Length: 233
Image (cartoon, rainbow, N blue to C red; front, side):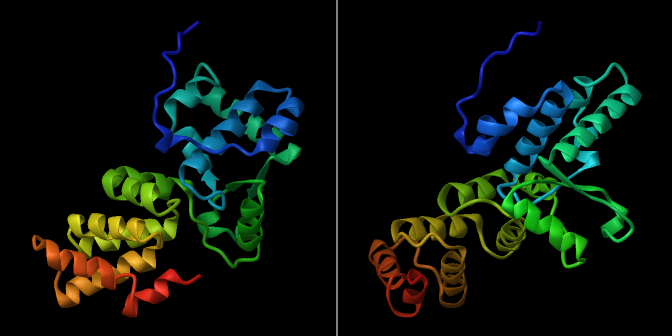
């Protein structure tokens, strides 16, 4: 038996597991592979911060440790993976959308949650180009400071927000974005639109940096005047 060294104290990487997994689903699953596949999917999609996202077959296969736990060789592991996914789909914990009408004719797996069901149904109707959890996770790895800063101060990272943050990283200095987020937190207006309004204001009108008096004036006008609208629900 391989010894486990314990969990890291890293709450930023914790994944939420639906309470029904423990109260209902855990007692129903009687197959180890189905359990592994279900937990892997919850963890993978959970890392993206939005349970409307999906996971692809390649996401399972590309995780060498996970695949090694399923079988002694790639062919055996893939067959066992397919069996586990089929069991999870038949049980109803996962939703599978496949066919010629899907983008790139991929097979998409969603968690059977309200947001997952909504995305799966929209994909079936041809109304959605799904966002994979991979895209969001990779985005967070590319820019750990900016993405972690957003999650710590504003909210969960989604594909749309990930793309917005990439644009902000190109258009504004990193210290501007960090300072604008701090202002949003201090004024208790944790919205990206508010942060973006501050950044645009600095770009158009100049940013008051080292002068403490001017900096304080900046803080005051961000909760009044043209910025006051962002404080309203």
